[in-house]
Image 1 (cartoon, helix red, strand yellow):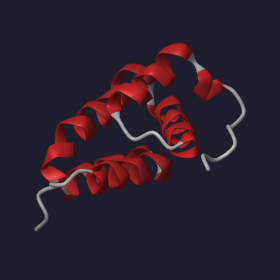
Image 2: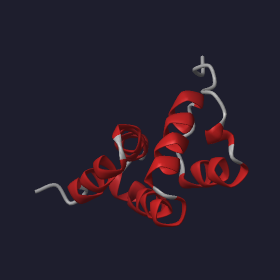
Image 3: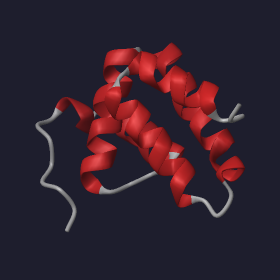
Length: 90
């Protein structure tokens, strides 16, 4: 069994955008295990901000092409996930 599968399963319970961002973070690292902590922190944000807000923030992060815990936390903190989606990054 893939040791990172529980992260992806957890992300799926939040929503498809969260799952897509977790997969993107894991794929961007030379070794997927390097993205484990980032993904774990990202998914824990749902406890503080709720699944719906985290899903919207993940959608925004994917749209603008950012793939990190810090960026998603900043999106949640500053509220751009409440704005209309940005144009996709070129």
